[in-house]
Every structure is written in structure tokens, then in C-alpha cells.
Length: 390
Ligand SMILES: [Fe+2]
Ligand SMILES: [Fe+2]
View 1 (cartoon, helix red, strand yellow):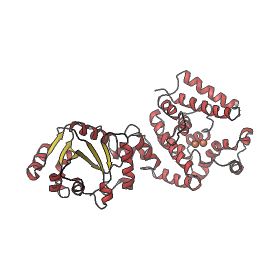
View 2 (view 1 turned 60 degrees about the horizontal axis):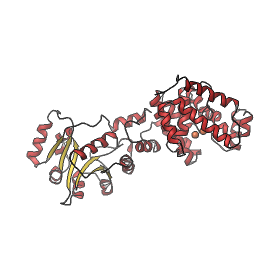
View 3 (view 1 turned 135 degrees about the vertical axis):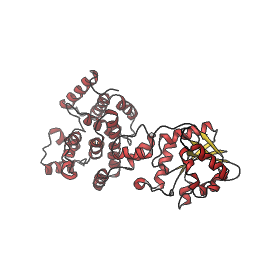
View 4 (view 1 turned 45 degrees about the vertical axis):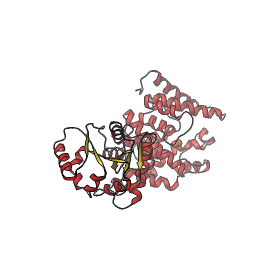
């Protein structure tokens, strides 16, 4: 077996890692490349304190379905500081060939790693990077001379993606769909990794009175809304808060009517009949009173997330669709909605409205004139192609 080893903290793993591993595996005819997830990397703290188990799961999610690329937990199981020399000792069996994959810029510092002589004795080095890094050739020669290192250069670059940039983007609600595999994105949002302090504290408060399933749906809607905002050029931070808190007033019928009374909100005839419908308008009040949200765009988007409204803003549409397309949804047809949401936002709103009207009719409930009018307006927007189409 010819085995490549790509070490890292994978916080998080991204498309750049995968590209490099695939490419090295192909060019050097390796049977497999192990993504060696560092438990406790030397001289490095883990940003946002993401624990090793979570980084391993992220890496597994990243490599699901990848041929010959494997997430490896040797360093985590071993415990203590993760020295590559120990890792290679663990893998070495005298039969398999080991190839340590590093960035070409690391050739200059490899000799400072713990027990370099062990590393060079047990594994060949595959250095990945542009062929023109100053001093790289000299560094390689020096390692060959001092340690008898076996070094091969892989003169190519992966895409310009870094884990630091991904963490920053999540923190700023910028969207990461193009940078990481879908499963990694899903996990990053579900685990609230790299999130801003305000979101973490809203979530904590929400969790106090929300059942786990609804909480997961709210967090999923948050992540999905951020990604849609990135596609459609809307404000990601507003989408994030609206997504997280949109169902904060979703209650049983009696409690909903009680809360309406407390808030001085008078339900209309329909809301009286089906108090579940109240959670849009009540949510709009609750986010102000209990979460201190004063952004009108966020408040309005939450207020109309059940039915939509005339002249929906981009943020309204994003929340409306994200609610039904978010990561934890598994109903038949959800993939169709997700595809549509990437290409045509109005089309996705219309699809969602048609679904909800269909559900109502199936339960023998006639849609209101208002909801039909809203649907009609969106339909016109879609047909006129005036709206948001990619
Ligand atoms: Fe809702
Ligand atoms: Fe919802």
C-alpha cells in the first residue's frame, strides 16, 4: 500500500484540502490519503475551541463518498500532543510506503518539528505548492543533505481557500457553500461552530423554551437563510437572526391565544380558528420584547414568514423559503425546492406557497383571499422575470 498522510487540525476541512488530496493521490499513485486529524497540535491553539471529536466528524463528513480519502483518528486516540513522528511510528509496519504531504513552504521549517530524523526515516515527503517559492529548493537540498530526506515536489496549487477564512465568513454570516462540501456546511451550522457571540446568546435563550427538534429546525433555517442571502445579495446577518428566531413564538393553541392577549394582539377570525397561524405576528412582537431586536427588516420578515405578504422584500422571501428548504427538512420534493432557491428566488417562494395551499386544501381548509392575492403577486413577479433569477 502506498499511503499519503495529510495532517492538520481541519477546523474545518474544506474543498482545498480535498482537491490537494485527490490530486496528490492521482499524481503519485497513492492507494489512499489519510486525513490525520490532530488531537492537540503542537504550538497551535484551536480557534473557537472546536474539540477533536467534532473536527474528526467534520472531516468524515467532508470525505463521505470520496474514493481513497479517509479521515483518521490515530492522533486523537493516542491523546497528548500530536507529534507527527509518533503518528508515523504508529503507521509504520515495514510493508506500506508512507508519504507525508506538506505545503512546499513548510520545507523551511520541517527540521524544527519534533524528532525530524524519525519523520524522514519513516516517510517520504510530497511537497505541494507553486514551483517558485523563494528558498524552497535550497530548503529541500538542506533536508536531503542533513537527514537523507526523500522529497518529491508536486508543482501545483490547490484553490485559494483557508480554514481561517471559512471561520471568519461563518462568524460574519457571509455564506460558505462554495468553500466546503455540503455535509461540512450542514454540520458547521448545526453545531453553531464559529458563530458570533450574539447568535450564541440568542440561541441559548431560545433553547430554554424550545424543544430540541424545533431548535434544530430554527438553527437549520438560520444557516440556510445565510446561504440564500449570500446567493441573492441580501444582508446575511439579518437573515441569520431572522432564521434563528422565526419560530420563537410557535406554541400550542391555548398558549398562543394567551400570549396574543398578553401582547395586546387581536387575532382575526382565521387566527382564532387556527391559533398556530399566530406565531408569525406573535414572533415579530416576541423578538422585540424578549430578544431586544429592533431591526424592522428582521421583525417584518418574521411577522410574514407563515403567509408571506404583499411586496415581500428579499429578506422576507429568503426567510420564507429557508424555513421550508433548511438542512433538517427531509420531505419529498425538498431537493427540488433547494434547486429552485439557488436559481430563482421568486420561483422558490411560489413553489412554497403552492405547497402550503395544497396542504391546506388537503385538510379541507380554503386558503384566504389575501393569501391567494399574495400568491398571485409573486406569480406575476416570476412571470415578468423582474425578480431574482440567476
Ligand atoms: Fe413558522
Ligand atoms: Fe419554521
